[in-house]
Amino acid sequence: MSYKIVQIDFPAAGPWGQEMADTYQELAQDIKNEPGLLWKVWTESKERGEQGGVYLFQDEESANRYLTKHLARLKSFGIKDIRVKVFDVNEPLSRINQAKLG
Image 1: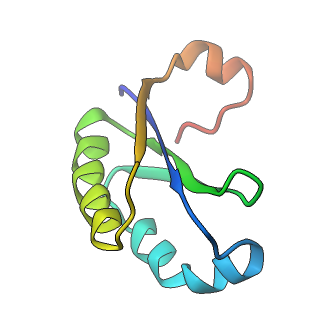
Image 2: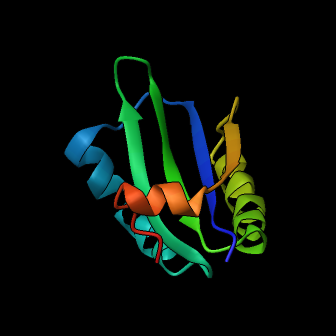
Image 3: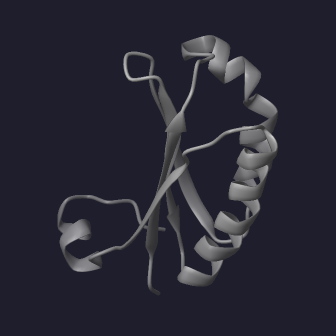
């Protein structure tokens, strides 16, 4: 298996904290069922005005499929200046440091 980490962030004016959790709960439920997604960590920085997430996918195909879908969704919300990074996972070193890879 060739795990992929995807990092997405973008400028945001809120919501933050529990309000963000309440607002995006339905979206989180949809993302949870994405094929090939092992986990997502939601990220936010009110101080920098940024939101996003870090995702672990089981393979490149799943990561690319999700990116196509999610970037279109974010753009439909009017979000601009979306930053995306995709990384390969070094599995042997990650397992030494207790990474939960599936």
